[in-house]
Image (tube, rainbow, N blue to C red):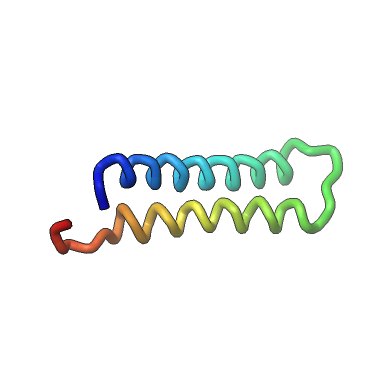
Length: 65
């Protein structure tokens, strides 16, 4: 993976993580009312971003590119 592609992947994964878990925290702590699909969707998006970060950057393959 090239450096530009790696940077773009990192930014998208980080944005998904922050938006998903930030939305989940907002819904649970501050929102007046929410439906069941909202925290489920926010949690899923946050988990998707966190998994993407873990798979591509934390547990990165040691093989050279």
